Length: 511
Image 1 (cartoon, rainbow, N blue to C red):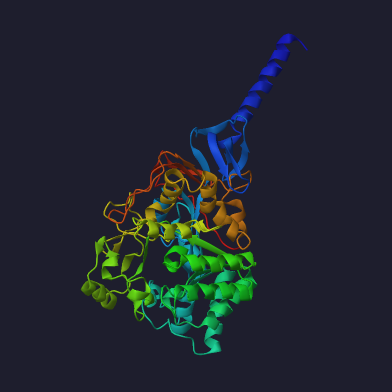
Image 2: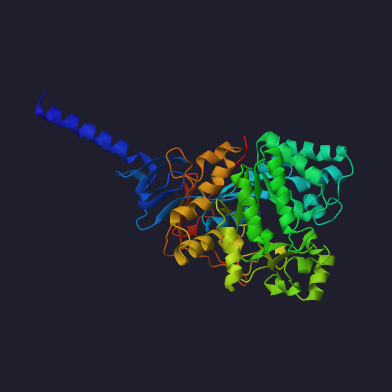
């Protein structure tokens, strides 16, 4: 072989090798501080993405069609919100700017499940989505009959009433509810969502029976506790004990939603009960959000029970906020009578008071707990903001947790107070939710991780800039510090700016 020919061969091989290397990854994230909670990784590494999957996490050089330099930034698994009521395009976009790549409706859930998933798929979603089976709607369907075909919001309208909230009078009625919930699980529902706090007179045997159903299907229950009260009987402690006993008596995995707001000032004794049960093998998990105020409908049953103001800690109508305005007693009673489905923020703890902040910390930092927003949709003057609206209007109203939960958690507990390390905090918002769901939902084994084979749901965070900007007076302010948000391998947020033309979200089901 002469020199010229050999030189040509070397050149061709070199060219082919270079071309192959250049096309090795679609996206390479380089020089970032990669945090993978499952493995405990916290190191400067490079991440290679091909299609919708992470295919490499390593220290060596990477060539790709697109390279993102993450020097000085945290490269985290995308956040998983297990308690996201804002199941629409607009709410998803706002959450993406708070680092969320998967938003699941698990406390309330959906019904009918197939129709819910089909509707979301037809519209498209910016981030991943999924829902549990809505026990309340299944109950309404069993008691009041199927929704009329010409009334799209019939189930939601009935929810604000009382006809479905009573004790079932026969085993046959319970059988009908069980059958509907089983149908939803068969269609891919992620567990059973129980809004017991909105139907506190529902039968305890019914709840136990449906918890048995969850155990038989190996899916979790997600329960809004029956009571929210400092006084006995019908106390928060009693309500939490019901969840614990149902899990212990059936072997089901029971997830307690918004531990912070439901426990009120009894988080100490309630926490002790949960911790001991967990240590004894009862399958219990918890979530919390880092705010002293909650949100719900003003006509909720918990605000109609006897002595409810004393039960919830001596609050008054002034603790209720509607459209950014505190209510008078007269306005509170008017809305309860005339518009019970009016959304309201309820100020339960004053976090400016150290003792109240300590109560909130106990719930947010509960061992093994995760962070979930309980966020909702957006309204202007009592009307829902339409999905095709972007950016979020400055005068849109919701609880600030709908925009800022995850940035607030990271800023407050990592960068401001140092109560958690980055690794510990990232676990509570990504791998933690994935791990507690993955036995029932195999898809979750690919989420909450920065590993080869995981879904390419990734958030790149500027640790010096991460901060919530939403507050009670101005909730429509999106978070800072999330420079890139990648969903299924597509860059949804770049430089902190969301691309409204992308809808890369995918369905999450139990199948």
